[in-house]
Figure 1 (cartoon, rainbow, N blue to C red):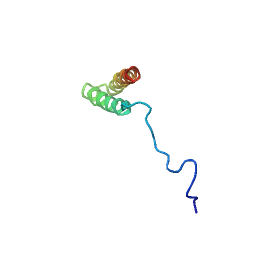
Figure 2: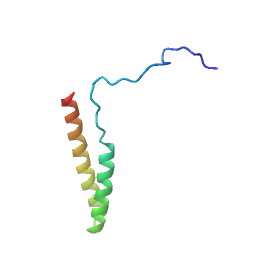
Figure 3: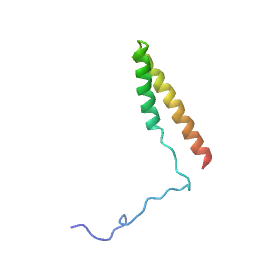
Figure 4: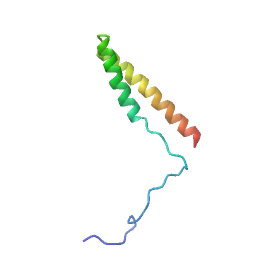
Length: 71
């Protein structure tokens, strides 16, 4: 049986900042899929994926820098 007391029991997760941060992973994933779909329509799915990845990473980086500056 596990002991009822321990250093990690009952510890709560805390955010150091009062404001929630934004995650860019979903933006990257969606932009890759959108790039592949648009590229497929234009006959170049690989180029569409590369372009979607570049756009998604740029947006995620901008969000990261904005969150870092904000708080």
